[in-house]
Length: 229
Ligand code: ADP
Picture 1 (cartoon, rainbow, N blue to C red):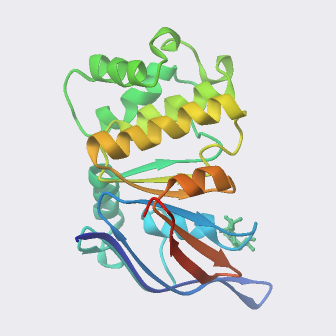
Picture 2 (tube, rainbow, N blue to C red; picture 1 turned 135 degrees about the vertical axis):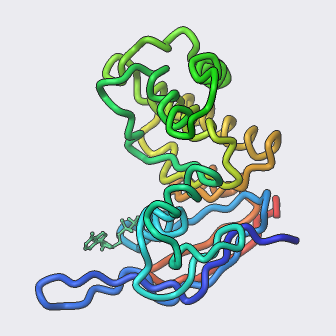
């Protein structure tokens, strides 16, 4: 089976107060295209950093991130942005919607960046898919946390990503809303074949994926298939 993502000896360090802090320490794993994967581990263990490196939002200190056969470390910033636009969706825990734009406009941004046509209609369709057609003209502050997260899902879905990285997608949501968001993620996997890589504290969500990767103190300490795997 084809690997969409391959991580080799991935290491990330930060320099602070003259000391070297190793946040990720020689991480190795590969992700099969179309699969669903959870990354779990204690707070501060390096999960968010790992996700950012995999998604090309940050650069490794050493080691290789290969996405769709492309070594991200060899790309310029512009090329990296292009790969992100083309293949990757990303969902942040705190939604990261642009506060001065409406829900509809937030979803239109990536479509506009890619120079696509009929972006208003397409963005409206995406909002409809996440059940928010009637909130399209609301600003982020006029939306609940769950609604904001669904707008950020619609935005992440807009480029039909080959792989979607989600950082604690249910972290700030109540049980009912988080169920809706989880369903949207798995629908996308089933219907479009989008590979999911989800950082989560939510063990119920992790158990719905095919595989759980456990990170502790910057090291990969377990990598197991679930009963879905
Ligand atoms: P997790 O997502 O598992 O909670 P993070 O990846 O957010 O962990 O952080 C891992 C470690 O890296 C933490 O100790 C954090 O303080 C440190 N860290 C993250 N970003 C930076 C940075 N820009 N500079 C210095 N240390 C950082």
